Amino acid sequence: MKIRLLGTGAADGIPAFHGDCRICRHAREHKGKNIRSRSSAVVDDCLKLDLPPETLMQMHQSGTNARDWSAVLFTHMDEDHFAVDQLQYALFPFTDMDHVGFSIFANAMVTDAIWERYPDWPLDVAVTRSFCPFNHLEYVVTPVRAMHGRPGEDAHNFVIERGGKTFLYATDTGIWPEETWFALRDFKLDAMVIECTNGFVPNDYTGHLDLKECVKSVDRLRKQGTVGDNTRIVTTHHSHHGNATHEELEEALKPHGIEPGYDGILIDIS
Image 1 (cartoon, one colour):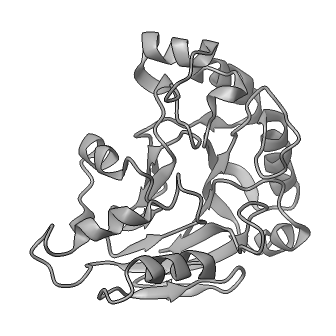
Image 2 (image 1 turned 90 degrees about the vertical axis):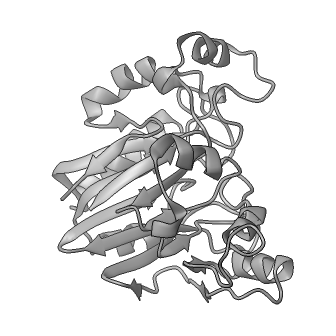
């Protein structure tokens, strides 16, 4: 299984649209791994995880081809993950296709928004529910509940299994509810991607992790056996408000066996 992180920024990216903080200025000057578009990923070039507004740019930069996608999985309906208008470009008159060439899997709030926007379009849409696994081609996908999203929304992180390999995509997690910790005991992860949105700057919002909370979450996964010595752990969804450059994240996370992700990083667990 090969996972490519196409974007690793939070909702406002780095540098932010109108940002002039230390992190934004550093990113503009040094570029490279400090430039972060909004978070998304693709598994084996065929399972697309979230559609941020800059999906097209990410495809151009990574060489990803949407015609290779067999499915798009949405974690939740925040606009930096669910840019619903992007779906129209998969159909006529923008292409020669009379149907969308990939299935869509998402929670009920997201699917309702899709059908409201495209009530008569030929879409293959399935509602996903936390802790209810589903099959797609050779993959088994288990949504687990994130402490995130809008009131009443069943926001997801995804455990994805194929060919004896197991991967967890955990962006916008917050501190998981106990039911999620319990469910994750059933998995032994070969790799995981976990948010580290708030970096060095904790705040009162419970829907995201700062660096200490990220490390604490990984340590708990280790203690319960979900994460082992050979599990590759990479971060995503970094905000400039976290006051951490990529290099500073590397230094802070290395003692904990965690890598800061960056746009375009490839995680190969084949």
